[in-house]
Image (cartoon, rainbow, N blue to C red):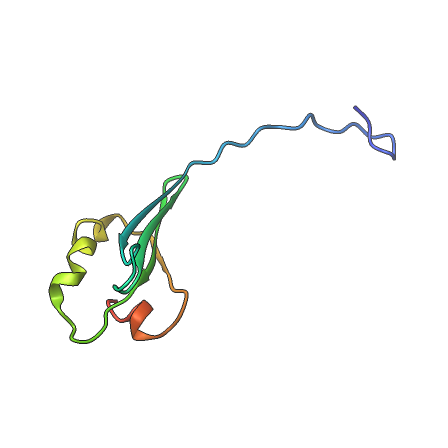
Length: 85
């Protein structure tokens, strides 16, 4: 295959990407949102909210995944999205 300039082009390659989302909290409304996004072995914590009355038990779902988190992505800088950090 050649480009318009006559040089050879590489054949298209297929790139496979693994993407998995796991809601941790807030998926059914009412609670501060939090979830895990896993992309090709990279684990992102999406939001980590905590709101009054600051009940520690609502952070429990994060305990089991905290060691796997490579980075945190916050959608907002308020307590509802970043308070649990």
